[in-house]
Image (cartoon, rainbow, N blue to C red; front, side):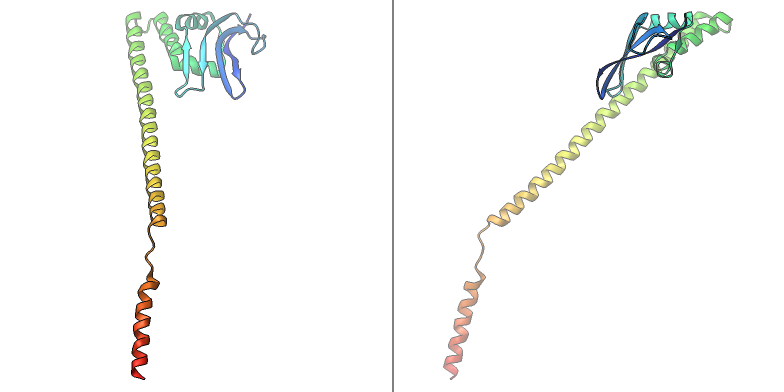
Length: 176
C-alpha cells in the first residue's frame, strides 16, 4: 500500500483550513485517512502550522511520500532535515549527538527568523496605524478650518465704500 502525507481541506469557501494526514494514495482528497499528523492554517500571517513531529518523522522513515505542499510544510518544521541527519548517522558520517546539535542550531535559527518576521509585521501595522491617524488628524484640521472660514462673520466692504462715495458726491456738489 502506497501512503502519502498530504493535506485534507476543511473550512469554508475562501477560508481554507487543512489537516495534515497520512492516507492511502488511492483515497480521495477529503476521504478516508490512516492518521492525522497536524493542521495548517494559511489564513494567519505567518501561517499557523501544528505538527506532531515524531509521528511525521516516523511515517517518513516508513516510506510515506509527501505531496509538494506537505513537503514544504515538513521542511518548514524541520522534519525533512531531521530525516536527512538521521540518514547521515546511519551511514556513519557523524554520530547522533552531532546530528542533534546541528538540528538544535537549525531550530534556533528558524525560531529567530520567525520572530523577526512577526516583529516586522507588527511594526508595519503600527506604522500604518500612525500614518492613518496622522492623515485623519490633518483631514480633521482642514475641515475645522473650512467650517471656521464659513462661519466667520463677514465684514461688509460695501459700508466702507458708501461713505467714500458720499464724500465724493459732496465734493462734486460743492464744486458746482
